[in-house]
Length: 406
Image 1 (cartoon, one colour):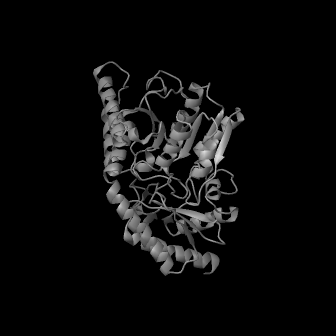
Image 2 (cartoon, one colour):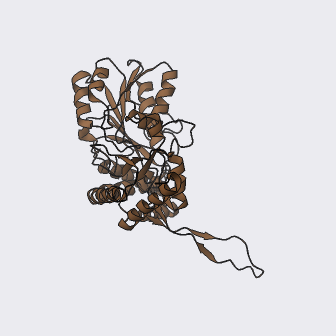
Image 3 (cartoon, rainbow, N blue to C red):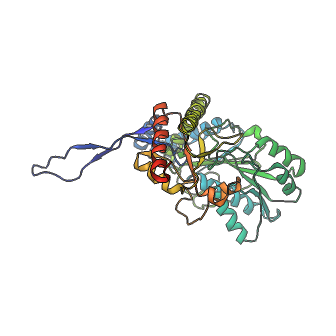
């Protein structure tokens, strides 16, 4: 996707006229996993509602009731898009808050459960940090190793499930490698070994990218995020079964059935619902195109004989491609590509500013510490073009020739 940034040079001439408009050269954005650009139709809906739907949805007058109607419709639309018509939805500020509400909220509401939580070694930082906090509170965290495919190792998960636990929380689709956990085999294991155990999925990188239907899944909670799908930042949701008890993490006016205090945001909820709906409606066509784009990129780097090692899971989110470049730190390559107006990442944007020596999720997937530090993430979207992919591969070659003398 090309972005043309318009920048006005501040300052005025003697007659006060504005100086000319400067057009910054075009850029190629291949960091969609970190965040997606807002979808034009979503932006239009959002700004329209910001002007017309400004009343507090808790107010009893006609304007408040109109806002509340927008909120109800957004909730219905999100549940419909995620196959959760028979379940409950709590709107949040994003994936991290949804994960916090799911894990901490569930454990606080069910304190008589065992003080043991099962997870995987390849979780997003939002889950890792919540569990690290709970570990300090006395919980035992059982981190199950990953298989060579990048998903949780089912044999080791079966071993973990043989002992009582309070919760099983897993990432649905890896934000680092794109590997997708085998949800139905996991549910069958749970049903056989510990049928009353609740499962929470961090589905931030799954919603709108692979088919997800909550009601028939056998999962008790799923976390999602709007900005990954082209909604404004600051929006997310938690799907949960009606029988699941949760304790609010934000207290206030009792909004959202007492699960999240604070004035609700109908324009943002409506924008999120529309972004999700559009993602689901175009999922099949986008997936086909994205797989073609990714394959074209792989073919091009092979044709150019570039010294890189792609990580391709057997089952994966097609948008994400992790690539190891031996002998070159990921951050160095990211900066070099950015200087050429091609934007990729060195892993999760949520962890990029933390002083972590190596990427834990990549190590859990089988890379050495050195390899993890040499791995970049390239993430595609349906609005990328063949031309952009070819240019990105060419610029990657230019960077490598400059940095490691290919």
